[in-house]
Length: 149
Image (cartoon, rainbow, N blue to C red; front, top):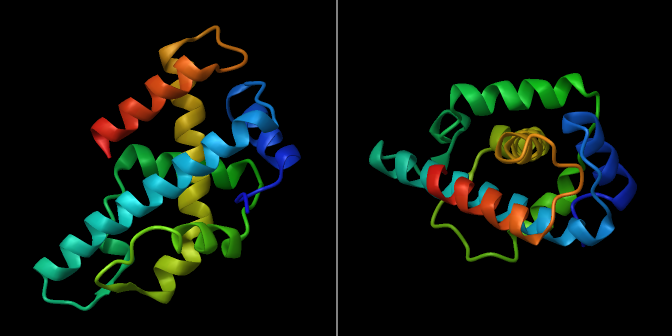
């Protein structure tokens, strides 16, 4: 189940970076969000373990200044993402050793929204005149995020 419907997905990218995506890009987007949220949780888990805690807290997640700004821009777009599809997608990945806190769980839609805004901005940085990202554009953006997160 996708983390959002095609119409909302298209609107989010149009509003975030004036990009024209279509529902054929929705699976790539879902895969991206799923993997990057999992990556955040993996690092959060390592931090929690290093601090002898058995629950991942928000402050364990590697939320950089730039990512925080993307989360804020997502809030300003006045759009929302539903929590349950995000959790369903995460459940399809290998289980973590630690659970995450209620605060982390409740923040998931904003984290996903911040990742979406960051992804949209990345497309713009990589190709300023881009209107509709193709496979190569998605691959470059994924590679960049895999390098830094």
